[in-house]
Image 1 (cartoon, rainbow, N blue to C red):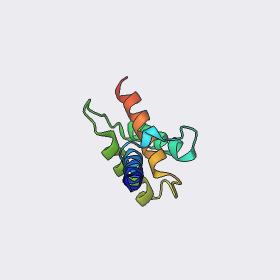
Image 2 (image 1 turned 120 degrees about the vertical axis):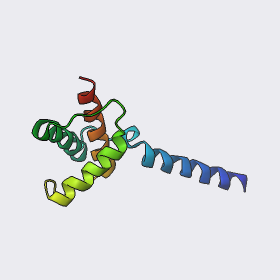
Image 3 (image 1 turned 90 degrees about the vertical axis):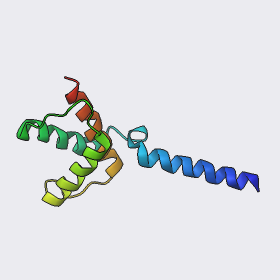
Image 4 (image 1 turned 180 degrees about the horizontal axis):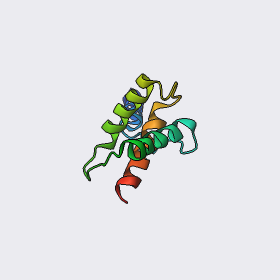
Length: 97
């Protein structure tokens, strides 16, 4: 019976990683990842948004995903974790420049 509990623990840990660390499993070549990168680029280029050093990219990019879907800028995102990872990666890169 202890192997069942161990299996549950492994499953729970895997779910935690996927939920809290989407970049760990993100596909940088996926359309959703590229949509996330484009969304953050648009914020910087079109709206001149600047990000402080302590920006919480996970929260910001989740909100950005909601905004682009609600506004219709993006009709569909196949993988929200990939979108958030692309947005976060690009945001960090832009903020470090």
